Amino acid sequence: MSSKTLRLVTYRALIVLSVFSGLSAVGGGIGMVVADGLSMPRSLLADSPFSTYLIPGLILCVVVGGPQILASALLIAKRESALLWSAVAGFGMLIWILVEIGVIHAFGWAQTIYVVAGAPTAAAVIKAVVDSGPTDSWRDEPRTA
Image 1 (cartoon, rainbow, N blue to C red):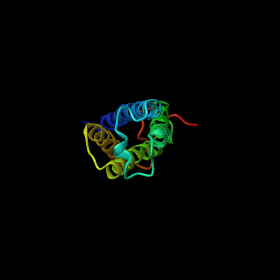
Image 2: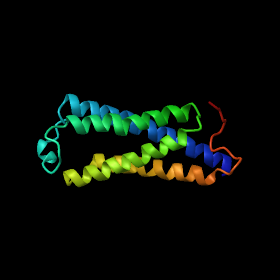
Image 3: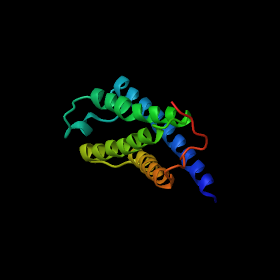
Image 4: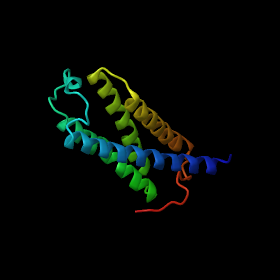
């Protein structure tokens, strides 16, 4: 597989991961706010500073989902800042999940899905940066502005 093909695969993987993570974080955050935790017991919040799922839902929607959606849009538009925002989004997802696991003292299928989405996002960003030479673009067809 050529290096150009590998870069294109990495780029497309970043788009898929960021779209999935962004839509699910925004949807999950809205669901947590509207449905007060999406049927999760409030006892999960016992060791946290929160008494309801309102603030965690807003954080999930805006702080985790927002950068994912922004990274998705920038990747699709092939903007120079796309890798930066993909890194912010991927590492942000991993931080969210690690803090969540620490607060609720549980690791289930949902956490597994987002570790599996966040870790490859972070790895793909690192790979894209490493593979890019000083005059080589990580994107297939560069655009500016």
